[in-house]
Length: 273
Ligand SMILES: NC(=O)c1ccc[n+]([C@@H]2O[C@H](COP(=O)([O-])OP(=O)(O)OC[C@H]3O[C@@H](n4cnc5c(N)ncnc54)[C@H](OP(=O)(O)O)[C@@H]3O)[C@@H](O)[C@H]2O)c1
Image (cartoon, rainbow, N blue to C red; front, side, top):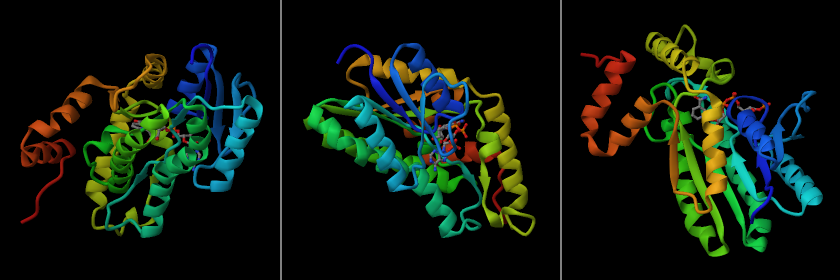
């Protein structure tokens, strides 16, 4: 469909989501951004309240857009939570929140928009994954698990919705300079008593350094715009710092132990004994 698209961008209050909403708005698309908080003043695109962990919240935001516009052409499933903690230190309730936000959050939005997309025989779902969904990151194990899961989810979704002319794809950013550093949630047991504390602190400090020096969120927004303009999207797109994309791309071709050894050196992790 040519002309302006009706676009829903979840998590548009900061970072990547905000950059996507701003660029798509600038390109004259009709953008509905979302946040769990009430809309801040001065945002020129529409903002709705939405918590992706609540089915009711997702349903009412989607219903509002359908009521006002009659369709949703594009969804950018961007809302996300970054949780840090050793797997042993992470309670299953904490792990559930991580997956509930990053995986089931996207699933809730997909389930809410797909009936209309199928009916209109048109629609595009862009899931925001991560290179941490290609390479498992230490002390962000459940974050990586959520983004690895989103990879399989997107591959399966594409196959299922193709018959209805609906498209799906996943964008995999490397480190991007957003509010992720301030918004990262440390699990409760990651404090001084954790047996992982020293390695955890060192690894998180490395993450923070890389995120702070990361690519601009506009890089992701430009990729999202090009996907929207491209017609038939590829399965996945990596985006962000070239070195990180190269390493993730090499992973299938390198012996797994070598790759893992490189990660251990990079994060300063040691084998005991
Ligand atoms: N920055 C990076 O280096 C990087 C790399 C790879 C992938 N990513 C992915 O990019 C996406 C955006 O992250 P970002 O870096 O832009 O982080 P950010 O600046 O912290 O933004 C996160 C956004 O998600 C929203 N959000 C969080 N929990 C939510 C929930 N339960 N319901 C609805 N919205 C929720 C936040 O909105 P409110 O708090 O206003 O509700 C905020 O707008 C995430 O999926 C993240 O995993 C980021």
